[in-house]
Image 1: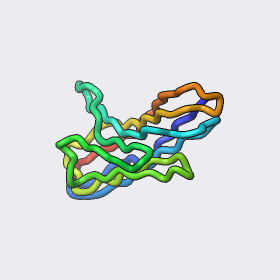
Image 2: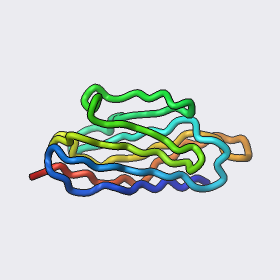
Image 3: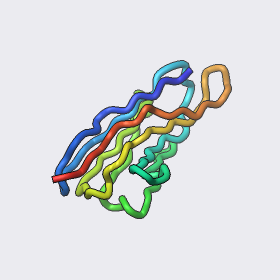
Length: 120
C-alpha cells in the first residue's frame, strides 16, 4: 500500500509564495506520474500541474508562469513552488501519485489535501 502525505500549505498574502511537498511511501517500485490538483469551495477538483518520470511537465493555464512542479525520484517526492499567489488560488491542494508496486501491480493514490489560503 502507498501512503501519500502533503505538507506546506498555509495562509499567505497576495503576491506571496508557498512551496508544497508530497511524499509517497510504501512498497513502491516506480512512480510514473506525479500531479497536483486543487478544489475550491463549491467547485470541481481541477488539475494544477503534472510531471512525468522523465521530467515533462504540464500546467493549467491559470497557473502558467507562476507555479513550478518538480520531482525527486530518489525520494518519491513531488514539489509545487507557487509564486505570485492570488486569492483565486485559494483551495485545498491534493497530491496524486501513479505508479507500480514491487509486486508489479499498479496504484493511483491521493493525499489527504493541504489548505492554501491567499488573503490579505
